[in-house]
Length: 527
Image (cartoon, rainbow, N blue to C red; front, side, top):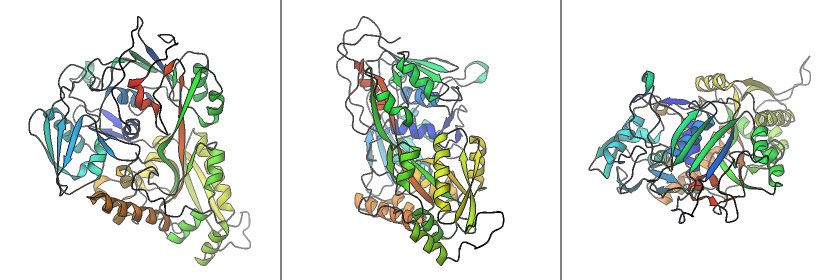
């Protein structure tokens, strides 16, 4: 589960989730090289995709909506695995002072309805995102105005230089205005992605290859997305040959799926960090030394091994560890419960000798976690046990997603356990931890310790300035932590071996879907 919050665009009342945007941006993080020459075929190549979601819905915010958006829409820029920005629909040029960005669209770009992707249309689409409420991202808040120069070029004028602005463009799908459908409902988004939506139904969707896709027509002719109520049903369908591609392989199932001779499993590190975040208004948690002590009390390695079956890596902060500016020379978080106890003693938080009816503890706090996901429950129970070893009582409160989002945004919590998006860049990190009211932080923690470092990242104009600012942010997260950053999770995709997938290294193979082909000895179509 990822933290979701629905955003409504004023033009057409289309609802798109932030988590969906982050997921789509992560999927797009890699070059989309042109596909090899199309193989002769007498039958259409179909790919049946399984997605596990207990909600079994195609409404905005669901997994199927995220997949459909990724396959049918494009972004102006893509975000590489190391956080570098790369041209996609447009080639950007920034002025020396960072106050203007000029974008030149690639020639002959088309939307699915056959109309051209022009600068005036793109400029209007971006203006709609700027005017959205709540604002789409901190980066878009720095835009003063957008002017279309001609059909291929538009210029963005900034209120101030911002590295977060181009990062935001790596998540925003570019679609053209669409007329209202029946009953006044908005028609499906008119994107320019590799696939176009043919039909959508409760529990699934069908897409077909877009012949005029700017990266070249995909080798797969049709994608059929099917929803399953849980991961077990989804990978069972893969084993039976009912589907070709399992979007998410649960950590506990990965070893089993890997044993299947008909299946290839491709793992990669996701740009999401598990974290136990703090509300700085709590009487004890407002003390930075207490928060440092709690970090020392947590054994991240054990959490990773047990809760995620060793699929991932331990975390030092919310900074994506693959980012080009990440400082790997800084020390990693230590597991030192003895030192944690000494620090808590020094703050006057001693374990009482006698407490009738209760386990003696220094202090207690309540941690919120989402219902229905065993990963969080396993982590929470392990954290609870580790903290009680240093005399801190962490109580658990399980909430449905909507209740959890409301409590977090209103600041009605002591702590929370969740999976936070990084998007491989800093736009989302800024949104989580900067205290500024201009962008309305997702989680109302009251934390202000990282404001200066985040603002330095936002205004960096050179690589040297960015590296220095990222170094500072990493140090702040260690010395004045807003959370216990636990681990980065690894996930995996599984695909039938009849599909030949381009070689990848620690990268989501779904981002290479336009290049998949039927293996030389394989059949031509799926069940």
